[in-house]
Length: 130
Image (cartoon, rainbow, N blue to C red):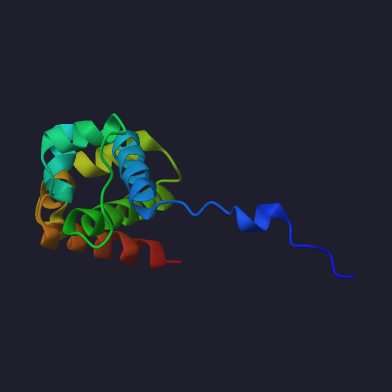
């Protein structure tokens, strides 16, 4: 006689993508020293919405522009974190200092979608070097 399936298999918890991305973007911003006021335009929400996200009252909804921008911001963070070896001070300095290749400070450039994509492409190109 075959054993009955485990109860655990029937009660698998699937994480909510909105909550996962919301937590990830907030952690990335915190590591980079980015305030709610600075994060809001990067992910296309109001400062009040970022505050609600921090208070676990609001989560980004999948298939929305803010969700997609948050995923891109987390990607930027991960690339930068890998390059600087996890040193938040170096990452913060990179964000706030002028970058000739990006034609400005990364923290200012990432406020637009084009700037965010340019910064990601720049970091990805730097990571690819051996």
